Every structure is written in C-alpha cells, then in structure tokens.
Image 1 (cartoon, helix red, strand yellow):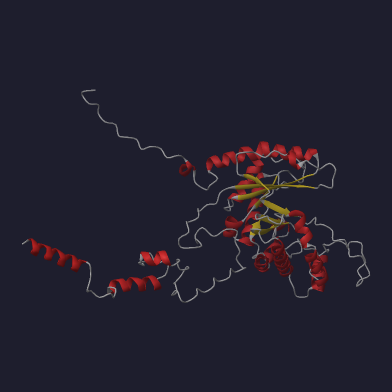
Image 2 (tube, rainbow, N blue to C red):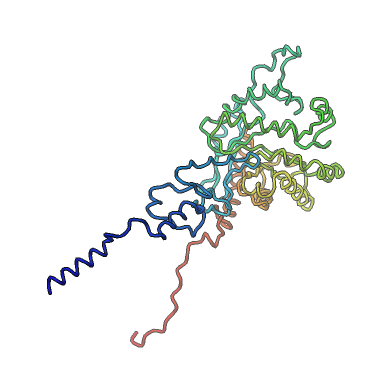
Amino acid sequence: MQHALICLLLATMFSLSGCGSSSTPKPQERQEWRLDQSAPATDPNAKRSPKVEMRLPDPPSGPSTPPSDPAPPAAPRSPAAPTVATSPSAPSTPNAPTAPSTPPFEFHVQFSVQEHLPTARGLKGTIRLPQGLPIFENRVLIVYEWRPEDGKEKRINPRTGQPYGPIWRPTLAEQMQPEHLARHLATMEQWLVTWVPRSFDGVVCLDVEAWPLKGDEFHLGRAYQDDLARRAPGKKQSELMAEFIRVTQARARELRPNVKAWGWWGMGIMHPAWPVWKPEQYAAWKSGGLEVDALALQNIQAPMPVFYYPTQFTDAKERAEAWERIKQNWIAMYGRERLSRDGYAYLNARHDDGPRKNEALTREEFRECLEQARSLGMRRFIIWDSVDTPQRRDTIQKFLDTAVRPEVEALLAREPADGRTPAEAAPAQPTPTPATRPSSRD
C-alpha cells in the first residue's frame, strides 16, 4: 500500500510539471504578444506581458512598430503656432501627468536703469520687492531699442557718400533694405550680449517701438506710406514687420538658444481713441487690415500686450469704453487662447501723461489694469518702469508698497497662486462624527 501511494504521488507531480507537453505557447499567450506589438500605446485595453514591458522600452505615441523597425522621427514643431508651455488639454505623452487647467500667478518686475546717468547708478539695488509673494525679478528680461552703437554712426557710407547714421532707420521699409537689415543683424550679438546672459533660460522681451505695425493713416503717417510705396511696392507694413520679426528672432535664437520664449513689447498696439477719432479708418482696417496684421504676429511665442492705465480718459464711463476697445484689439491680434496660455501683460507703475504725470498709480488704479488683463484669462504680468533719479526710485517703492503688495495679497486670498479656487486650496477639514446618545452608564 505504501509503495502504491508513492507511485501515485510521483505520477501526480510528473503531470503537474508539464513534462511531455508541447513547448509551443498557448494560443491565448500568442494573442497577447500580437496585441502588445500592434495596439496603440494609448489603448487602455491593450494587454501587455510583464516580461515584454520590462525588456522593451515603451513605444512612442501612436501605433507602435516591431522592434526591428526604427521608430520614425518625430514631426518637427510647426513655427506657425509656437507656445510657451504645452497646452493643458494636450499632454506631451500618454503617461504624462495632466497639467493644471489654470497656470499660477506670476508678477515680474522690470526696472530699467540708464547707468550712463550719474543720478541713476546704484538706484535699482535699493528697491525692496515685496517678500513671500509670486513677485520675481530677472526671470523675464527686456532688450530695449536703445541698442548699443555699432561704431558706424559717423563713418561715411561709400555707397551713398553720407554718414551711416543711427542703426534704426526712419521707416521700416528703409530698415528692411538689404544693407540696413544686414547692419541690424550684425549688431544683434552686441545687443543681446549687453542685456541677456549666455546661460539665461527665461523669457526675453524685444522692445522695438521705432515703427508701428498697423498700416492705417492714423498710425502710419503719409510720409511713412509714401516711403513704403517707394521702397517696397505692393507690400504692406505688416508684411515687412512679419519678416523683420522672423529674421530677428532667428538670429536671436542662434545667439541665445536657451531662452524659453521670445516676446515683443506691445506689438500690435492700438491707440484706444482711434475708433472714436477716426471711425471710418478704423472700420476699413477691421474689414481689410486686421487679418494681415494678426498674421504678422503668429510666430511670436509670448504675446506681450500692454494694459497701461489710460490716464487720458478721466471719465469713468469713457475709460471703461476705452478698456473694451483695448481688449478687443488684443483679442483680434493674438486670440484669447494665446493670450491666456502664453501671454505676459505689461502693467505700468506711474502715470506717464496728464496732470498726474509721474505720480504712482493708486491701488485702485493698479487693480483696474490688473483686472482688465485677467478678464482675458491672463495670469502672468510684467510691471515696468525706468529708474533714473532718486525721486523715481521713491515713486516705484511707493507703488510696490501701497498698491502691488496689498492687491496681490488680496488676489491670492481670493484665488491662490497655484490656480486653485480658495475652497480647493483650503486645508481639508475632518469629517464630523455623528453625535451619539450618551450611555446610561456615563
């Protein structure tokens, strides 16, 4: 009996070990391998063998290819729609964490200092920024049109017999002539070396205000239009501006490849009184010039619209109407989505005109500018001013202390910096335990 039991046990073990069975995988196992090789990487129902997943890298987005076939190169990013950040609705890979639907608030300060003025030296370092708030310095740099000289200003141009003169020519049409465009690009290196460190990886604003974009008579006077017709027959101002932006940014990227995004200060700006002062020209521009102007700005990575306080409108109703025209212009130039996703709104610290010229904006005035930009979904802001005298430094400090600090604190109290609502940002409260009747023994 004992011998029979031992034989029975050995037979059972022999059958369980699979000895004598075929080494071919079961049909189900082969089917799993085919699914793993052909199913799109984004298919949540595709089964994957643990051994295959450990030994092979994850396939690229889209249908995967057999290991023997090299993966096709990724499609180049179209320059027609550059962005500062990946759109929250389109993560870069299927496994990437979903980006927050609302970016955090950012306030960047830009205080330009004309160091060649004895009254300005050292003043910037004495300005105290509010602490503990999302207020940053030196993350968004600005390169002004007050560019370095190239040493040719007084030299005689052998072709014309006249001095070369300033780098910037009186009109964009003249600037885009091959000789002047080459001179512009040749000074680009000195221009950027002066203002942007080689390793800088933030955002850079190019400030070129020498010529307007809009080609109507109000923004582009008759002399400009005549020069445009003579030097570039059949061309629009916006077409020349698009080419100027393209070649300038291409050279800038070569010199500073680590820069995250390039923007242009107020490019596409419109005087808020234009629709009122010259309604016929404004209507003609909306029907014929708006589209080509917006097309000229499509390759700007970081839109930088201007929301300076419209001091010239002292009446609250007129100012509200002016704000609406300002916002509609920026929407027409860049689109609401680009403004909210990639834009940086420029805000000013003081009145630049009128009876209150050079006075600091009050908190209420700063809030008005801020809220107009926020109404377009914008959450990145740049506060700009120039520091050239101790009095100007004091004005900026007053603005930071009495307007910026309390208003940003109030804004974060209503809507935290990380994009959550106050209710979402509040710490979780413990769930109350239902009250119970005390025991008779208590």
